[in-house]
Image (cartoon, rainbow, N blue to C red):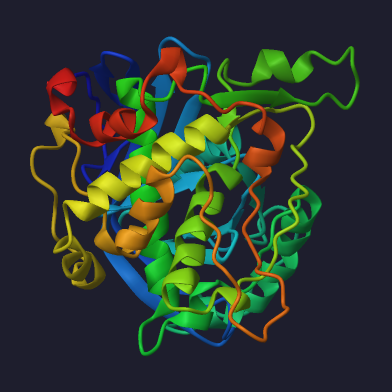
Length: 401
């Protein structure tokens, strides 16, 4: 493991790399004293602090396939950064991360946010994400509320959405209300979605590292605006970037299963996938086989860690131990909403529920862009049982030692 540090002891500017049998996990930046807030998608005047701790950016690449994942974390809360999810700089030390159904505000302390550090962060976000500077330093757009104000994120929410929503519409994503707001009583549905996104990000990243995801489980898309244009191939990393749909579709599946489990399946809004990969960027997404594999991994993890949910909801500073070993840790229990998802994934065919008597309303269903794109792929890799593959993905820690 190699690591170098900047003159500022609170920040690591040069990478720390860990090698695994099927991939590489590189921490490219670490900054102390970060505060992560969640802006409520349904109530624009609300913003809650959800994590306080060290901020880090990691890049995960697979050695045998040209795919990568880049992710951010504060403490042990993870989220992906992708080329089709907006990242905005909205102040001298404030950044916004938008995903379908989620909007994060990240703010660094004055002591840890030296400009050379933030310029390094900007370069990383430009390389791996859809980054724009709206801090007022470049394009003159300024956020009127001071960054040190406790209401900075709640006051800036609507302006951030006006910038980010057009991109989501362009790629066919729904930046609107979370499904969980329909079914959860007395619980912060936004925080539930945060936990699910974090857990799913961890599982996908580890699946890439240990080689559980191979070439049979994903497709690469490369739409060129001009057929002869090879400029972006020369300036971009050699690997394909993940789409935000890789993560958000799985979150939607979990939330949809919660609707079914609660008996509110009629409230499940129909989804008509219209995913449009951005031009001139290599994008990878799991196909139907990959979806089944990852959902099974989530099921297995959730079934083995029913007690984790409460700890994940309340913790903001607890550090994980033994990070170098990178053992498969249990997934947050809420990420699977109980045994229902286990029953769904164990079946090769979708389970159909009969309508109640006197009802002629069609049952809604989630239709994934990844299934539409790769729906003809239905068999396991070399005949392997996908259920067993999913269990190995979560618990075969021996290959990572």
